[in-house]
Amino acid sequence: MWYRVFEVIVGTLSIAVALIVLVDPLLALWILILLLALGLLFVGVDRLVAGITGHPVGHGFPVLAVQEAPGPGSPPGSSPPKP
Picture (tube, rainbow, N blue to C red):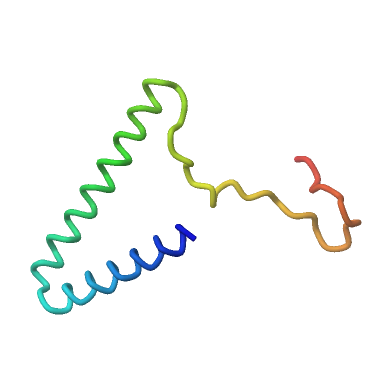
């Protein structure tokens, strides 16, 4: 339930920011700078904490952790061949 509320809030904010960008392009530039600065700040703190503690704080890039699927004609439940 809380996730749906969060998505509605984020969607509403996205629409509001889009309207602001359409109305005032100069303000859009400042919003872009603010979002980039905040993103870099969070990434920097995350990497700093990971470097000091030796434990990654964030989840990294889960998209890059893709496992290779078995090829066509492989029996069900088989794993991909090891290199």
